[in-house]
Length: 580
Figure 1: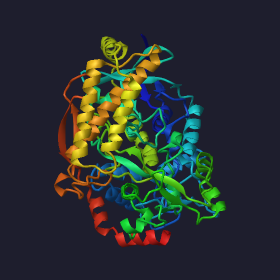
Figure 2: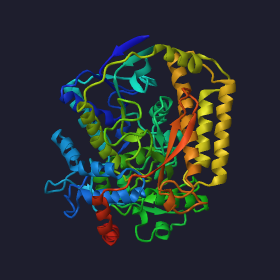
Figure 3: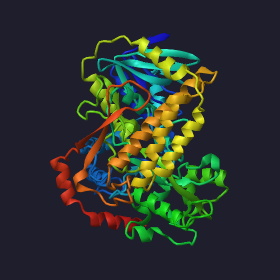
Figure 4: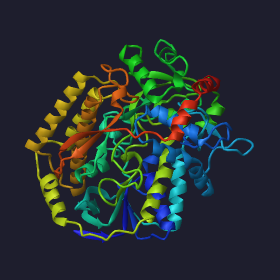
């Protein structure tokens, strides 16, 4: 087995790693390697269209970073780490300026000022955007920057194991070009993305967001937090089948979309009389879900999203990608008629635990940030905050690495990797991996979805345990091609682990809190403002073996508490009305 030795290895095909690698490299830490299972610029970040938040106050001079923090914390439903919210929002303007200095092409007003569009749950307009391809523009800027620095990147490298000894990270084990390869490094950084694709309907592309990094971290004994807090976006495409669940961007909402049922009723006035379509994602997603479930949806199982009150010229200026995509996929001119949409699994707000003071996980010198991590988005992520997180926290991770004396490299225990491969990958079984994977994903979508209850959650948990037992007894079939065999099997193991955690967390959280909605417990429990941690019982296996720890949420700073007391909710509601 070939071994590559580096000081730092960053794992991920996402925009997040770029900012971290760039900062490390510019500070003369050049013995780094980035690996990802996709091509260099084919990051999931390109799918983030709507914009990136920062209190630049170009459109609304009253805005500032404290108000941004308050908006974020309130929409979290007070669960998460408020210190990280302050870090996120206070570094927002700097992050935008970093991109502008590298020639990011953001939309501007006639006077040259940055345009900032209104996104739901924000008091002011603070979403900077590059038309409706903001993520793609950010990747263009960051990848060009990384190429200029000649930062090495290993494409199509699938990581299946996070290696550690005595709770210190030693590197990773992966596969590329029909060869198993170890990368030995005393510092490992995960930018591996989320787990929204553990559900049957997802806005993610087919080959990403199965939670591989989170599952690997769990096997290596890192704690995982609040997996039940998954965000469902209100508007994914209903058809064609090949694009089911694909996102109709939040940017369309910011520009003034309206939602109707099949009876031509603008139904959000019933669910949210003041905020209507601009209410939080969880509120609008549940409203869409209820309209469909109660028979007021379209024949294809959706509701109608309408922007035909906006001119074609305006739509082509602000939303050119959405206009052309819906025209191509649905043969609909959105300047003339509505498009059918329905809720879709969109974002995983929690994941790997890390210490907010040094950005390290439970495993020494193992770092993570972005969608594979926890804390930053609470129970409800604000649209536009995830791209900001990409810029802010990955630079902070790099700064934390640079501020400490580097650890001594330890050898990877290759015998462990060989035993893992022999036990879980090479052994032939009877169950088809793809069929097993789809059974898990459908169970999650049907029973652990937008609206949850005890009966369905218990059924889901039993079904998932039955699938786990079937895999243990019968095994997964082996493909002749080694890469296909490895990836297809690991995907099943990883998704099963996260599916059980998600369902268990939903059972334990007997309350409703933003994205987690229990119809049998429809209100928040003030005594359960807690985090649910999944702790590996020191068992190394592809099968989940966790115990539960509950911990109280971190209290906000005096600055946040004072800001909450002074926050003008009437002003925010007035802005909703004015925007419409």
